[in-house]
Image (cartoon, rainbow, N blue to C red; front, side, top):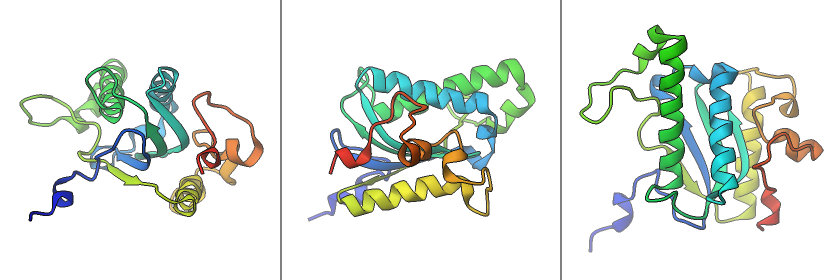
Length: 185
């Protein structure tokens, strides 16, 4: 019998399960260093959360990638929530670069039949979180990203604005879409 799992993409997400999700900007470009592009991600998470399509339990937006701990509750129309998220943000990035930085837009040009630009690397990583311990470990990993020596984006985890660290460290919710991970376990 053929192994079914080897045909499941690493970005596959089942509705109702909790996942650690990583999406990377194409070719590792640091598009997300600019806060206006980070805000596009925040806006998309807010929208999908307000429509009860997703729940977000942890996140960080880094200069060239994002990490989320999230749960998908339903499709967004006919699209998967992660598909909608990646498609919407890519569309907004293209719109913003066309208007503000056309030269940078060319860094994302691709030769494909169905699109001219690709902002996210294909087949993002989705790792199902089955145990509380693993979920907490991934949340710690997310929160430690900005203070890692490689990045040094802030002195403390909770000082980095585009992360859920402050929510967990101080109970201050800068983002309406955040829910507490430990409420699930």
